[in-house]
Length: 239
Image (cartoon, rainbow, N blue to C red; front, side):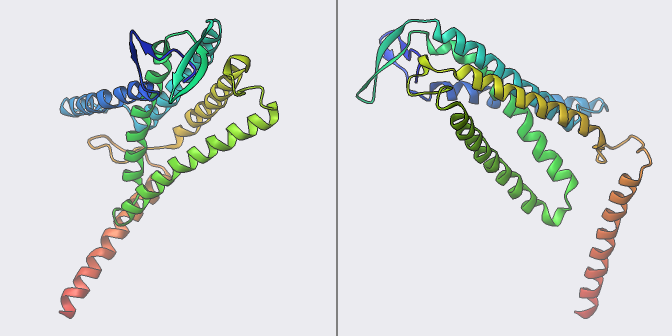
């Protein structure tokens, strides 16, 4: 909205960049499925979901860092008039397509994190409550949006509106992007440090390391199957 949306004589819609962020998701999802199937066909273990999530968080942090540098680059361009919805705005003359790298990295991050989170939630939750767990996973995405809105309002209040005023050319939006990049980097490092505790018990064909956590999970799974059998036998006997 604050960049040049003109492509020749054509005025692009404001959501044009969102289409660019969706393309990596559409392209990477089947590619990752193909790679996973290939690894399983040659009896090799694919990349662990926790590592995929770490890689996706890294892409998100790099995306915010690139956004900060591109904002500095955008402010170096002179202002031009651009009409949107009948309102004349003074925007940067930088073409909006120069913002594509940050949107592509953001789309790659989403393509890596979302399926891996769903996979972990599906594997570690008992089958009779998997649907509920996936609903809570979706709810966490909404909580992330609310947290993002809270951070925006908090930064706006603490900066007195200087980070992103009505005219972004006079503000310091790049500082906000660098702040988010720092928070995302800290989040990525913490997740990477804690993800070593995660053990994928669903990998077949490889011995499991004996640990109290794995034994408890396997015992719990066996107990569920036992009680399901008893329940079915009791029902059949009653009938």
